[in-house]
Amino acid sequence: MGKGGGYVTVAADEMEKLRRRNGELEREMEEMKKEMVQLWRRTVVAEEAEERLCSQLAELEVESLDQAREYESRIHFLVDQISRLSSSSLEVVVMNT
Image 1: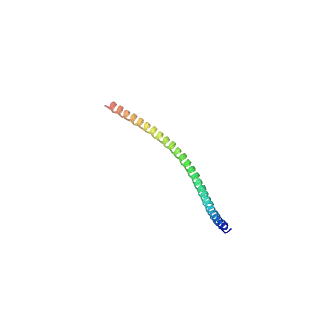
Image 2: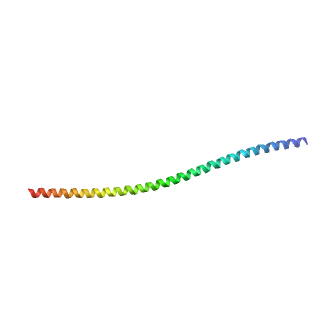
Image 3: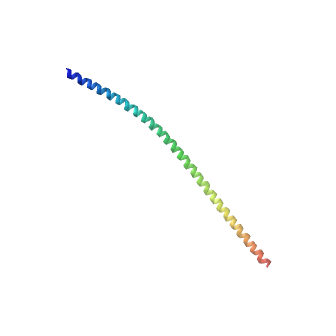
């Protein structure tokens, strides 16, 4: 019976070590869950920010395209004005000679 008591003591010691290790692993798992939730929240915030930036970029692209069209239209108008003034000046010069 002496031998049997030794096995029980070893088994009880092993059981206690396993319980402690299990507790440690459960705490680590809870910590990892908390970190994962924090990372998920940060990811959501980053995705929302990306969507806002993309939307703002699209608005700016439209605005810059409108401005480019306005400038081009203005340049054509000014070129036409210069052309008319130049031809009018030539007519005046030719008539005066």
